[in-house]
Image 1 (cartoon, rainbow, N blue to C red):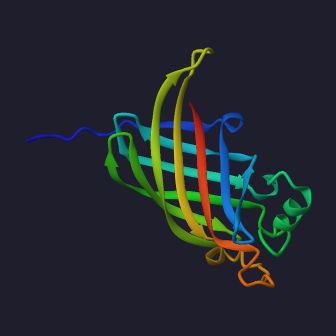
Image 2 (image 1 turned 45 degrees about the horizontal axis):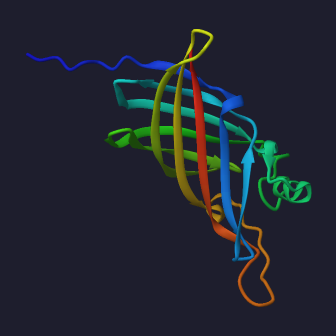
Length: 182
């Protein structure tokens, strides 16, 4: 009788000073506006030798949005978009890991924005492990996905005189994560 090795899960916390949750969306149908959320927290659990058993629980403070334009940031925090007074956080909770190959995999989970949860698939790159100068251990990952903002109740827009709209529907999301082993 053979016994399969049981994964040894280790818990890692997100290092908020070395992590960024960024996004990109079309503006006026001709350019791309990029922004970020400065307050990202959470825990990731995984076995470095078997990522298929991993899980992620990430919380992003919606008020920490920054597009380098105060007026736009205020609009994004308003009820037209994130409505941070009523919905101060965005969350991602993983459900499964799929399609492992080399140093990449797909992480399937629920993204919740404005109390609307939708399944998303993150394409994740594993950048490996590293000892830090203070005797700890770090891990690095980059995760990407694209969502339709209207699916999450972020529906504000305006029609342009020449046709088209002010804000595109598709939002490209990139999470650059540095984790600290607990």
